[in-house]
Length: 216
Image (cartoon, rainbow, N blue to C red; front, side):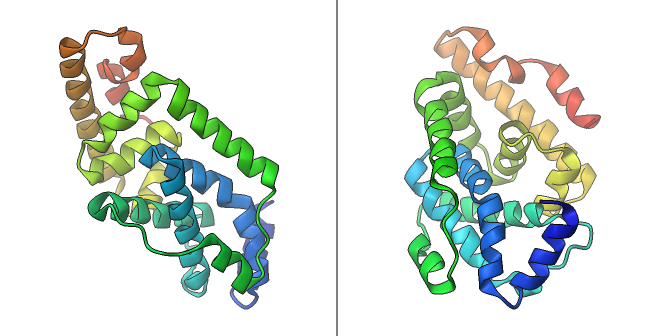
């Protein structure tokens, strides 16, 4: 989908919920994957993704680009929902079936969604380093969690993170620097207590990571 096509679909979706289905299909897997990587729990992430698109549909009338891509808007909603979950450990009771049935939106291609789930579950179940890193990040304050997850799990540019978390460039860079340092300290302390191959957490054991954030 080109940027112009997306703009046209968004305009249609403000009056026609069925048009929103095209946006749902385009971004559901990505938002689901983000929620999985943030929470480490597939079932929880599926509920969060459902809530994200319910809220996006509900508030589509208020969306205006102003230089912020629609995808960044969805990530912002997703980040808020994940943060809400971590603060309360409580999910809002929104059903994906309700979103699909009441508004005539078709579920994304089952194969694509299954592939996203399989990829995420493989990371969660088979890659100990990913699991350990995800657990370390969730011990940090949410302001660090969100920028670190967007940077390292979603590979977002700093400018994109600014759009998603609605913070200035300097603030985001500072959060990345401090968050990365806090993560490095926590990981190294854990490695001292529980020796493991340093390559598993190498990206956060070097000052070069912090420097790289300043130039991205």
